[in-house]
Image (cartoon, rainbow, N blue to C red; front, side, top):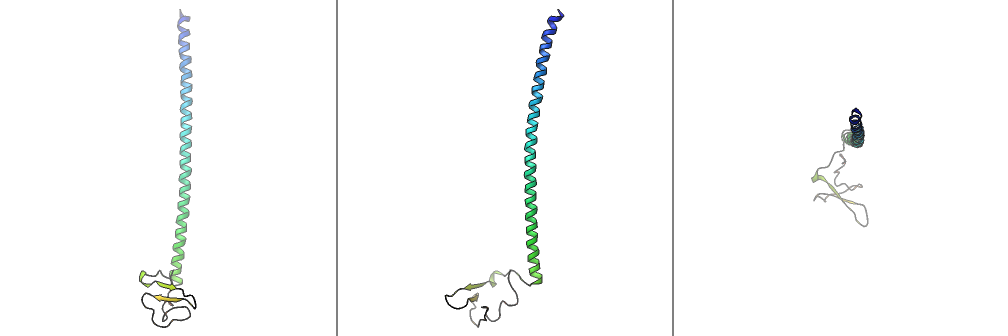
Length: 122
């Protein structure tokens, strides 16, 4: 009688063991996929951080150049009202106009009445 009970119980335990092994293996594979996706996300984040650091350093370098040009060379950004327009003629040197003021003499560089000599523009 005991052999009649042991055989079905051993088959049930064997099937449950196989099912447990398959279930654990599938969970392990799904965890490996999750880890792989997280590693890709981490690499993308690191790449983006490096790009942001490079952009920051290029911006800081530009600000350094701008500050140095402003302090050492006296260069400033022109205001919108003080923009010089250069017009080209077919013959002769360029003419420079400062707004509506085109009267007066011009020197060899095209500046009218010495304007624009003291400060340059970035």
